[in-house]
Image 1: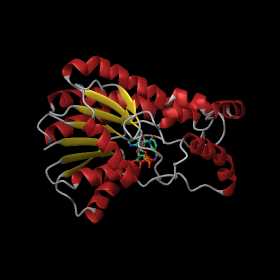
Image 2 (image 1 turned 180 degrees about the horizontal axis):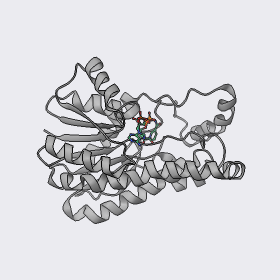
Image 3 (image 1 turned 60 degrees about the vertical axis):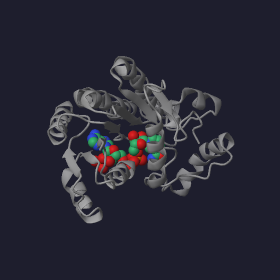
Image 4 (image 1 turned 180 degrees about the vertical axis):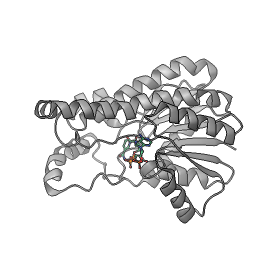
Length: 271
Ligand SMILES: NC(=O)c1ccc[n+]([C@@H]2O[C@H](COP(=O)([O-])OP(=O)(O)OC[C@H]3O[C@@H](n4cnc5c(N)ncnc54)[C@H](OP(=O)(O)O)[C@@H]3O)[C@@H](O)[C@H]2O)c1
């Protein structure tokens, strides 16, 4: 039965992946968190301490802690891994409501720090994560490596719909999409599938906006609705995880999917 490593399982989509994948007792599920104690307690309380779950501690921005987690995962699963899910990341926050030029002009030093943190967590950490776990993935049967990308990282979508918000976050996802293509190019011959899958718009707590924030967010919402008139708003993590896993299961190196950046529909329809 397959083995999974998922980063960022303390909350949001990561917790949902952990819960879903461990519901099959044949799966081996390893979740990575920054702070082990609260997630271990949550697994005890909400999932009856499922025996097929192991929680490991690593800050994904710290190379040494990733190497340690990879060694621990290898020991748990006999040196191999079937699925690596790079879920941990920073969602948009400071850049969520104001356009990039305004942010940089008003607070250039904050831009430097914010940009660095976003790139470090959403891009560099995943490069180091992939490199640390590749020896295990190469020994695995399914050999699938997935990151949670975003529609906002699609350059054409931003151009066609004048999407100004979430700029730094979007740039980090676009950069990670290119990293995915590069890993795919390197490891396609070894049968390893690399994908970026957008989970859709998912309510993991980031949409609790004040009336003032909502006024800034509303134009983005209107653009999304003009792109997809059927768009009904954020879905639950439960729905999103189902969608992402269907896409991951359908894709394969043999079908030419490695390096692809896909929506929760398995195509380029983002909403
Ligand atoms: N929600 C959406 O609508 C949406 C849409 C498109 C893509 N995504 C992507 O999907 C992924 C999950 O999103 P989400 O909404 O579930 O996010 P979330 O609720 O903010 O959770 C983020 C997770 O990442 C972890 N994390 C952050 N920095 C970390 C670090 N340095 N080391 C280890 N773990 C770290 C957090 O751990 P702590 O609890 O320790 O902070 C948390 O578990 C992200 O990559 C996001 O960009 C989400």
